[in-house]
Image (cartoon, rainbow, N blue to C red; front, side):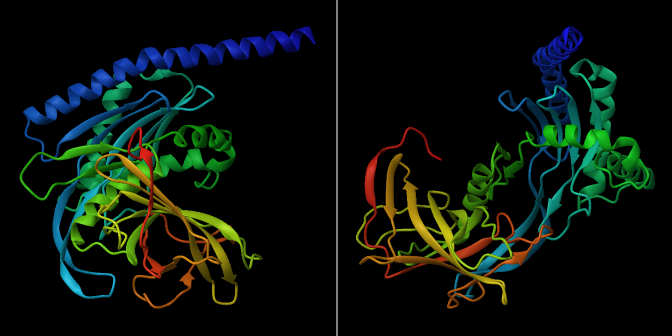
Length: 389
């Protein structure tokens, strides 16, 4: 028993030192990333680079802004009418270092992606180190060099060299040893899987806004699905001009998850508004990203994979940080809210997709149409919000 206690105490001390070492080494990493950004500006690199540090999640990242890729598509309103065009952009390229709860540090590369182009492998686990002290200057230099290679290979704007493409293919194959996707390497490296999942779990997603004018790109580092959804909603919301009390284009940031055997009353979900919303008897207009709609699956048909997705709560915050809310009660005299597909706005049921784990859901950050019948007249003012969600 005494020997076990000594071993446990030693393991606890090792982990404590790892966590302490992160606080020290993250300063060096941030300084390195800052120097990379400055050098990129001096050399007139085609894209602005930014640094985002999240001490709560023990994560730091170097990431590229968002830019157009020279193609566009017709945009339509909720009823399918042509209202303009949308310029396609690519975004998401990042070099991320993140420490797991075990003290290990994962170095992960993310490629550019766009509406028209994305890589089959969503990221590369560049390396996993047992201790932050392993993140040396040479490691940072090498990882940064591969980050720029990944930019060139994954961007739609470049014709990358054969050497770059072969090197990224090598890194993608090497990455599989950490996830167990590489055949025999699963036996050799499978002990890393739970370590890497712990580290990647704290990685913040990236989304940055590309403005329509000539001002510099504005970075928006994102730490959760709601923050990313709001950023996306605000950018997409520029396409919608007319507020409505009955129909609001919205984006999922919490997906409903319905077991295959369920037929009703399961699967909570949440959306953020994309098009403007204004109750008919209210003077307040809530713009894109101002409202959240919380709901629940109230009916699921396994034979068609369609479900009734009902809205239970509306929560909005206007530009003056005034908060409003409304609880919907289907059996009382008041508005009911249901979700419809943008392509089939009159269909009261929503098509779910079968996932790999046999449950049913919808794609994250996909758009839908929230319909209120009758239209929402008023929404209750509940006070001044401390901060906007």
